[in-house]
Each structure stands twice: as structure tokens, then as C-alpha cells.
Image (cartoon, rainbow, N blue to C red; front, side, top):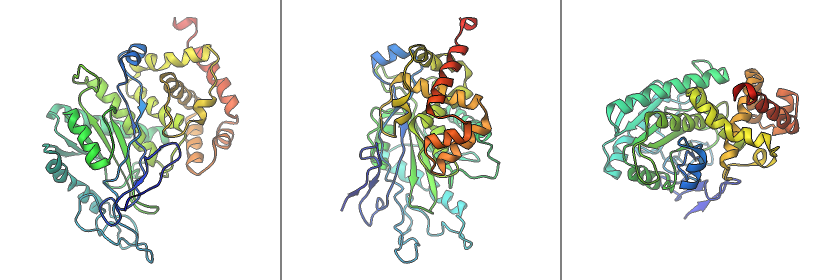
Length: 372
């Protein structure tokens, strides 16, 4: 029996799988991809494409069904995509070593199913499955920890604070067809139009929260070609930021503009040379007196325009420059369930109208004659 539940604005993206099997528990996924886009879009935005959302589903981790009486796992087994039977320590905390050990067993299962030769490598916070050449894989190991450290700095997170359980699984595919096949087989996701994606592995409230990211090394649009190292780093910074933000403090979805804006912001922190390209469309919008109403009301699954991604980035850029402690407080208030107007007013002292006015002044001042 197939049961479904849909998250607001994300049609078909949150699913319940076959009762009693591997896909038997709710797998709520927020998967957003940096998509290649069509020829017209590429011409409009230049060589480095801003992100586009992809509706994606993940059901591979739909693990143990909770016992109605005691809340314990009714089935844990040895399936690599289920939680291990000993995922809890005697004191009730999560057994991170056991969760990680189970994550590592996914490698053989994926290789056997896809006919790939993914190899495993590991960093303090990431588990990499990659069939890329060793130098490319080594780049990702460096990028991953650098991004994690930068995100921790942005949010004032201590070294011992955990974001996800186990480790973030990063899958790197040399072949785009294998990337698409992985998404279809293990995530029940059509990733044909995705540049990359991340998936939040959610079992149930009070259970481990895991995440994985999948990235192909070649472009989506013909002529198919290998991505540059800079482009791959941008893709990873964007998707890696989404994964981090989703689970930071509480696994609660943030407003779409904030999720996308912060992911784009981190690509610029990673590579400051991207700033002019990612700022220009927003400057044009500010000069034209564009309204922010649609963007601020957008929810997961809504299609944002290229210019709206730029606006989202510059909104986050302004809020960060207005004070990192305020920005952290704003995000934490949202994570605690406060609505946007309340969170903005509490953290910054102004509402959405005040934000729009300050954002416009901020951009017009930065793009004045002195930088022309």
C-alpha cells in the first residue's frame, strides 16, 4: 500500500513508501538543485548559473517503523538504508558510531545496484562516495571541511555542536547518467534536470536526522562537458549550505528566500569573485523599484526567477552586514516557530517593508558612481 503526504508548496515531494519495507516511513526531503537551465537563461545570466529549485523525493532512508507502545524501532535489520538496531545508547543519546558504520555499508549496495565503482573517503564531518579521479575527490574533501568551518563561523557554532547525525554523505558521480539513475533508484527522484541536489533524511520526531548530497561532474546541457573546479566548488557550496541550514538548531524549513539567499551567500563567501555576477540582477531590480512581496512569501517548491535568486542573496548580504548576531537571532527565531514579521522585528527592529526600504538603499549605495 502506498501512502502519500505532501508538504505545502512541494507537490509530491514528501512521501510515505511501501508499508513494512525499506521505504515504510515518512521521508521528508527538501531537495534544491543548482540547475543548468536552458539556452535563453544561460545567455541572460552568463557562464555561472544561479540555482533553480528541483522537486525531489528521497525514500531510501525510510527506516524503522516506530512501535506504537514504546516508540522503539520495530525493524532495524541489516539493510544499509535502515537505522542500526543500536542507534540509541543506553542513556538515550544517539550512537553516532553505529549510525556512521551503517552509513558506510551503503557503498557496496549502491555499487552493486548501479554497476559503479564508487570509493569511500572520509573527513571529520563528511563521508564521500566518489568515482571521480583522486585529485577531484581530494578537492571535495578540502572544500567540504572549509565550507563546514565557514558555516559554523557564520552561526557561531562550537566545535562540539553536531549538525547532522552520522556524517553528511556526499556522492560524486563522474557520469551524469549514473547520477540520474542513483536519484531514481534510491531517492525516487527525477533528477534529469538537476545540476545537483541534497536530501534531508528524516525518520520521525526524536530520531536521528541525516542528509546526503549528490553531484555529477558534467554539465546537464549539451554539449555535455566536464565542469570546471570552480563551478563544482560553487555547486557544492550551494548544496552543502542547504544541507547545513536545514538541520541547524532544529530541522525546520526556513522561508525559501532565506534558504536560497544564504546558500548563494555562502558561494560568495567561498569565492568572492562571484559577487558581481550574483549582485547585478538585484541591483537592476532595486533601481526599478521591484516589489519583494512575491519573494518573501515564496515557499519550498515555488519556482523563483533568476533575478529573485539574486535578490535573495543580497537580502541575506544586507542582513549579515547589519549584524551577524542579529542574523543568527533572526534564523533561530524562525527555527523556533516565529513568523517572519515577528522574527524580523525582534532581531532587527523593522518589518518586511523596512527590510525592503533598507535593502534598496543598501544596493543603490553599493552600486553608485564610485564603482562604475
